[in-house]
Length: 362
Ligand SMILES: *Cc1c(COP(=O)(O)O)cnc(C)c1O
Image (cartoon, rainbow, N blue to C red):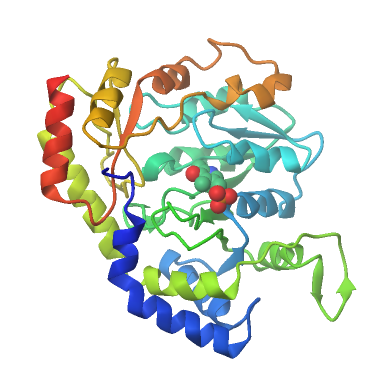
């Protein structure tokens, strides 16, 4: 079976380095908020050209703590995309605020700045753009809207580690960039993990306190916080993979270019906007024959996944928001046509050619 991402192959390539760091950490007996977490935070901050990066327990927590630390809560509205993973909206709901959806751009599948402006009310406090599938959202337009209406911007970078706009990394545009190290992400741990990148020392201080039970240590608690720390073992493993992230992303881009070249014009290949670097967390095609393509691939032993079959406004859990079919037609159409194909640095040229041929034959 050709998997969506081959983590076994990836591990085989880094096994010795990973085992060395794991043994070093186990022998150090420093398992929570130790030197590996600090080192990883510093390296990720430098990579993004931001003041600080803070390790937390997951991408979901990165979003939640960022929203909360910006003072957003009950009675507030946060504008985001309906075409994303559920956690983007959950993070807003955890704080008591309301997610307000704005439809997406039909080309990039990212939130459409024009639709954002139409959704701004007196209650709007923030925008959460998601760099979906690894393609940067239109941050120039989004930051301009945010400045004009004095809104916070929290970037959901769970799928975009390493992506950039004219050399400026996603996660460095807004007040906070929220990353996930879930194993299948471009930079994945061997368990859960997340990180917030940010510019403002005050915001950083609030997030550091929130991730650790509202405490600066010594059993003094200035607020009610959370247990949300990136653990030392994951940070140590992530440091090994971080050294290779640019090479991994380049391989993804080469694989995407080959898919683009091999696939017929009858399927829609992913867009890449001028000046933007897509890191292909997913390589996602669109076709009216999506289900047929999926089943032919499956017959040939090739995985493919529909990310995402149900846009957030039509999710059962969010029924209380009162949306109906037709509210966000671009997101709904995408949900009917998208199909993500196997994509990982170790994916071989002959496999890509074989996958493209099966799709072209449909
Ligand atoms: C994976 C993901 C998250 C959540 O990250 P976790 O680490 O799994 O909590 C949030 N947003 C998007 C867009 C994601 O893909």
